[in-house]
Length: 344
Image 1 (cartoon, rainbow, N blue to C red):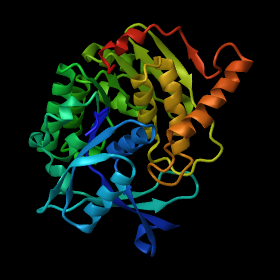
Image 2 (cartoon, rainbow, N blue to C red; image 1 turned 45 degrees about the vertical axis):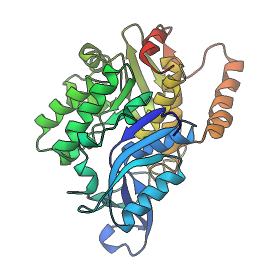
Image 3 (spheres, rainbow, N blue to C red; image 1 turned 90 degrees about the vertical axis):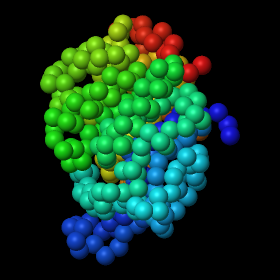
Image 4 (cartoon, rainbow, N blue to C red; image 1 turned 60 degrees about the vertical axis):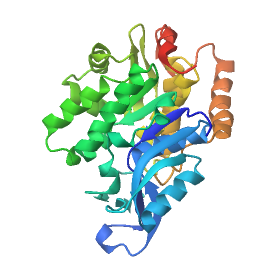
């Protein structure tokens, strides 16, 4: 098997998306897709040319086969996906909204195969990956999945591999808000790059200002933090640098689900290519803006050729007209050395 660039893990569910607007109880037709924040990021990174290994579990059912076949078509290495004969593949129903508002999502995942992930799923091959991306969703599924998340992040960081973490809070899956905050912050302390949304950061740290939220995670052991500010863009901070990168204007918002996953794809891909933190945030904002213009959780994630022709060409054109990129409002980046722990 080829070298693993990125390891990602979590639950991919089957998703049934309503074909008509309105209450899900009265929708007659649905379109079948897949859903899962962790696998959205894995797919996005695969489309950009990275070798991505996917660690998960599915049921021995038709939905599980559909999930795995879809991920394989997206280029993911699914040889580490276990088939569970005792527990089913999770699924969800998603409403259709044509006004740009957040859709209604109903989950059917309790006791799913993926909730039975455990440290026993970790193999030496997986630990050879150059980078690990983790989110706060697997640790919310069960105690065993939480233990696996902690062990994977610990072992990867101790081995000198880079680790990114998106809190991706799912309060309904936790026994209490207090437990969620404690466990998510414990995992964030194991990551090099922490990628919360502003509301998540406020809840998890108790601070209101993005600079203070970022400082909290830097003090916990992170090397860099990027905070998503929605349409306004993102704020980033390292131990040596900080700044704001404006968002990318979008004429029509079609589906807001998956925007944060697109942001993570942009950050991780750019940092693994040794771009500066402002450049990484700019790419992240752009991919996030693409995500909200497509119906579906990961349909808007670009290929490498689209990244080159649509993103790089657009900003190169702007750079030719101005000496400074117009979307950057930040002090000079001094944080390139932070990538020393990242993959070669």
